[in-house]
Image (tube, rainbow, N blue to C red; front, top):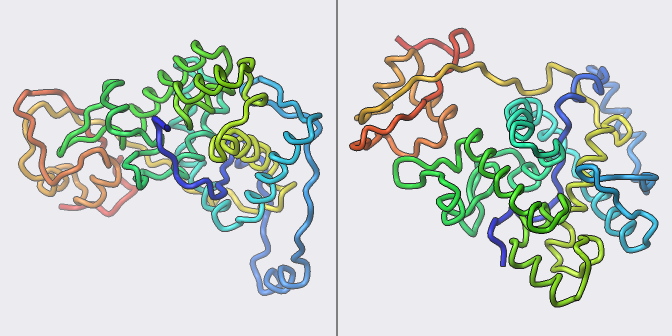
Length: 310
């Protein structure tokens, strides 16, 4: 049984942020582009890379079932083009926030791919109730110190949720001795993975285990995302720097009292209610009942990026 719920394992794509700009190429801008697409569109079988790793741990691509499982995810993810382009755009906006936090907590950079597999880089909610970029259930979030109530839900705070995900993954790595198994346990739960290792009398190796369909695909989905988005041109994705979404600079305002109306609060800081909530999705109501005097830090965008509100 999963501790952390996921979006359905439909294909998702994202790009290593450091490669976004370097990998772009100019796209045609006139009607010739449409003609070219109609005339040249084909579906190709994809070559399997000669070698791959997750977080520095090699993938045994010499084994036939491993190659077939990777091939499936490469095909599915490559040919969902519209979703892929959206994730290129969002990765450019959010990876600069996620990457330094993973590094701070000693996690390999590859785990940013896991965040995309979970939520497609959106503060969404799964049918099981898991929420935020990292899809924590309420019970797990609270266990790791996130505040979750009617007024505040820190699963939607990207910085705090990323740090909690890092702590969870580090504990899994300590338990299993493998980053790959830690990623699988994010999907199936630590107990679920441990039970299968015991039942199958297997080594602590993800690639030696027979797991449920979702977890069996999970790491291969991440591997496919890493491969495709490290090589966008190779897989047919074309975009310009100006096509990518940008991170909006913000500053933080400390609040240690109740806020009676966030619409008024927003206007006091030169923005409207919508923009306040876009930058602070963890604020879940129209006001903040802060009778304890706890300190919160609300992000306000720098001037010049939105229309000023008087």
